[in-house]
Figure 1: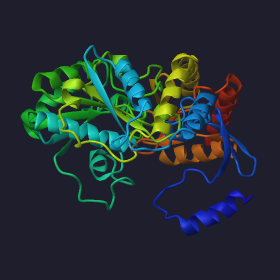
Figure 2: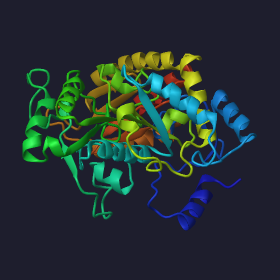
Figure 3: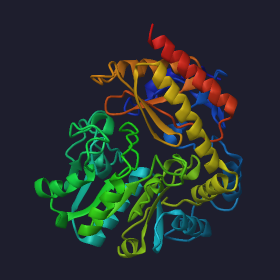
Length: 433
């Protein structure tokens, strides 16, 4: 079998540089929370395929569901010949989504497609053009979702012009408050700023939807204060604006609840889900109020591969693993363990300026100085490399690239978790040298 270096040479010859690679490893096998490369080296996985493997690599339920479905039929196109896994999954997600109202669900292939369809539904239903998105937000790489995404480089640089009628508002980033205030002594709700935003940037009467991540993913695991989303929903309801919650990275149990927005007791008009929804298979869902979702005309939504039967069966298996096998409870347990360990690390290492998130979806913001909060961007890059060299794959994120995030599979054993945390701490020690 070729080595990592030989495969990298082939990759550089045949694949463009645009699809970036975080590590130089080529994986031969992955099970649970461990990946093995072509040279036999094992890595503890704190990345989970960027939040895709919540139930672990090759979960037995998921593998069996895919095998069983593949022997029956692989594709018919739901628009041509329907099948029950699509309906079964839609029904279960409608039940799981928060809100004491009738819901409907349709499927697509990726998180970006889910966001695109959510925006299409909101615009069609409200007959309004404008969408409000957030600073630090990430919603995808297609034209519309790239336009909704905040960070310019690498996601938007050189790819304009962008989709119109996108307006960007500040997100409640308490560690780096956009208003220069200090939480909780500020005594205000950032959501109130929306009323001013309607005056200065776009009228409420022109706004179809506000789209927000409950916890910003690529933006740095930024977590709003408890009052933010309830207040935001009230303002949306006041003006007839659809509230779209993008759960692509935060959903499927990542925060200890199936949907992260449940932590705030908010009932969104539309929810988008993807990544870990189908245990590694390409699938996304758009779940929303029946009175919104059922308005677009027949044939106005869909796609050839959308809701592929293998992906739907895999997603049903993921739900069984979360609820019947106790993996959602394990997510809660992991969050408690990690919060305690990260608080200890913050006390020990001055470079850790902030610890935030919910459940096991946690971010460590690295700074060179806790007073100035100067981002430790290069140090974060070095930390990722040091961990990789020791057998731990971990990711950075944030607008400055200075936030270390945790996305390990819930099936990780206590021993694997401890080994990963030991590597992280050893690597933080090396940063000080």
